Length: 176
Image (cartoon, rainbow, N blue to C red; front, side):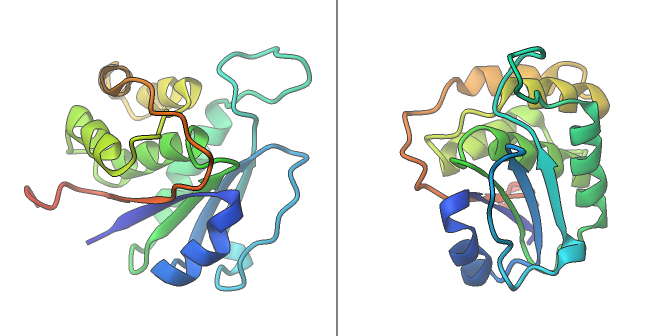
């Protein structure tokens, strides 16, 4: 079964080793310095520079845009799924859960958005997917507003301290 590990930046090395991840997506602010875990080859690491904001034109911050979401979709398509995909951001609460939902739907487009969002909530009471990434992902994946509605339905996650990585199955294990 394929799955995605969502992690805060502070735990990426631990999560990569623990789950034997070999592919990683970093959704991180441009000025945020970090080291790629040694188990992730440079050509299997996608770094997308963006801030965790929902609107364009917020000072000097970089809002997620279509090029970011297109890159997530393309990278997910190139992932062989033999080992988990690790997706992280600063806290592992907003950008990376949104990226995980987008990647999961791009890999398995036949799944129900509401079920996927409920699975996300069940595995992470803290996840609050970045609304801008979700809106763009909904459009680019032709979800017809269903992904946006599904994320709205699970609501904002509980307050988090940035120390709660989680695993999201690509598909519901009960239904295949």
